[in-house]
Image (cartoon, rainbow, N blue to C red; front, top):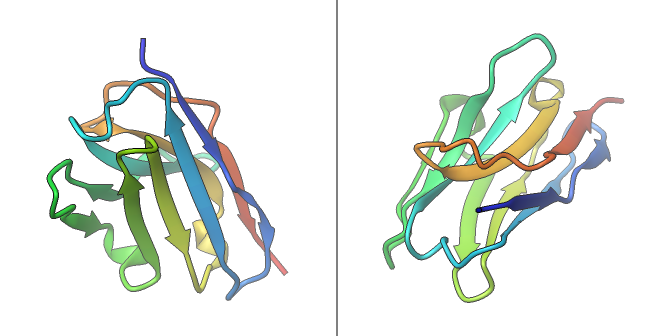
Length: 116
């Protein structure tokens, strides 16, 4: 059974930065494409960023975070990262990681709150 554990969330002011991490219970980062997802109150969970499993690590982002967020991974350490800069109140959500396309291996998520 695959399990993910997300961490790194918190409360930050608009314009601030946070770095999220996701660890996996199995060495799947080098096998599957991975994604960061988020769910804001009253909204559906959405894909924020994804990265391929290939050595090139090609990435894609939802338009609302392009130029502000960076997804990366360390296959040797089984860690997925999301660097978030220039945060906005609309980024407030619980952030999750899973393979892409998602298979429902959701962890507890990590809360990100952007507020002054």
